Amino acid sequence: MARGFVKKRGEVWYAYWRDRAGKQHAKAVGSRKKDAEAFLVAKQKEVNENTFRELTKIRFPEYCEVWLRDYAALQVKDSTLVNQKSVINSSLIPFFGSVPLTSITTQDVQRYVSHRIEEGRAPATASKALTLLKTMFKWAVEWGYLAQNPAEKVKPPRKQREEMDFLKPDEIRAFLNALDDEWKPFFHTAIFTGMRLGELMALQWSDIDWNSSTIHVRRSVWGGRFQEPKTRASYRAIGMAPSLAKVLRDWRLVASYSDMNLVFCNEAGGFLDKSNLRNRVFNPALDKAGLRRIRIHDLRHTFASLLINQGENLKYVQQQLGHSSITTTVDRYGHLMPDIRANASVKLDATVFNAA
Image 1 (cartoon, rainbow, N blue to C red):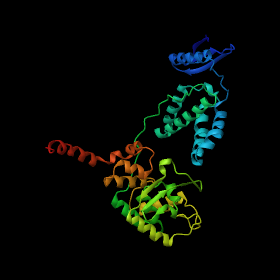
Image 2: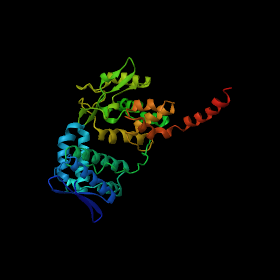
Image 3: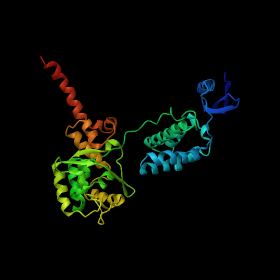
Image 4: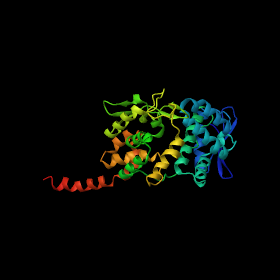
């Protein structure tokens, strides 16, 4: 039988055990004795069944480099990779330091999440960093750097409802009227399709099916080049309203030529600049129309609110927006449906008492 024991050092419980060769191993488990004891039992079982493997020693910053090189660089989009590098270099490494990877405990990870909230970060931001850690540690287990994932059982912070704003029909008309003619097609498309900004910038004339009145989302733009849409669900066909079809047909006659066949491009036929769109076109038009400052992304919420207001079900809204899960759609837009819920409850009486 494998020998071993648990011992508390400071606030952390450690598990100690010996392998078949008699070499002693130690692992910081966490703040609870029972977790250390459970971990020790698992290690002893591995030793007894001859499945125990000695972990490869590596420090946290070096492992981050390995993970970025051997996993992230091969599996995620360029924009995601840039974001992950930013989180790792600006947040994870400064917090965890140059400690051995095996010394990071579940309590350490939970403390990191709390630290992010104390810094004033939004719960969603802290949750994304936690998700990144869980993925990194998952592969550390697979590659023999860790015996178990210390982030696996860490709970994300409770999310606050996203502050959402959108334009009402009269505000939409005022906003569009405040735009110069050259920008009306772009923002008309944004409002009547709910496409993400990168998807709008990547839209090509071949993506428009005039016969079926649909617009196909097939790509996005990031870093001055095409990339795949955000998720698999982002590949979608969006119904094209008659007013939008007319706007785009007229726009095709006067739009700048683009070698990339872009519907919306700069004078040289290249991609539009996001900062210019926001600072030189979008915000001035809002001001001219006497409207509050919202984000360009809120035009996506505007599209969703229009669909819901006209009685479309949330499954259809999900498909049009390209959400991977209807849960996302319900969480973000379910509260916009009070009248529909009220009518449903009134109908119950008619269903039961007027059926006879």
